[in-house]
Image 1 (cartoon, helix red, strand yellow):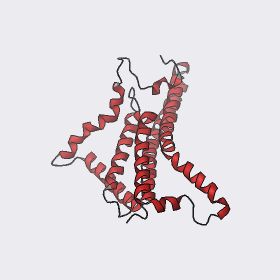
Image 2 (cartoon, helix red, strand yellow):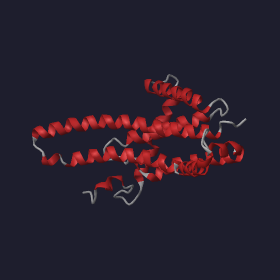
Image 3 (cartoon, rainbow, N blue to C red):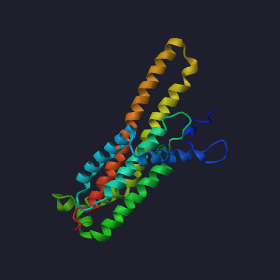
Image 4 (cartoon, helix red, strand yellow):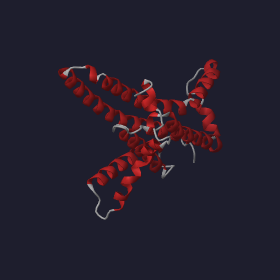
Length: 227
């Protein structure tokens, strides 16, 4: 029995061990399929998705940082798998917890900032004042742009975790009302739950894509004028 509504998002287990965090690493189980002599349909589909992401991220990042698309495609795969595995019953959704989302967003943002300020300092200063800003508004724009850069890892982490929590919370609320309904309303609730589950699958894909694309755009900003 749940002590409160958000207890389903608590990363703890009845064995007094945090074994539910292993759901984030269950994707390693499908890795041996990539070494088959004849690839399966699932492997071909995943390769097609990875190549599509590579081509899109290459346009966003540019040709100056070769190999970076592998990192962002792997990040997309990790978040997508964590979102999808959390849709199964009794599996903890690791991407709905700030411990994981902030651990992904903060190192990326910090590495981008350090790389940009060390290797491309002039461009980073120029980026604080958008082109065409009136001189009287320049101090305010520097303050606003600095704050927006600082809160980027927080917005990335909260956006992903909040969207994953919202859908799971709605499914939990509707599921708890099932024993109080009659047969006809129970069938209606079942159909609504299926529709919400389909919507959650779409949200899982969209949120992993948004997180990765925003990280790619942040990377492209610090590499824009780097020779």
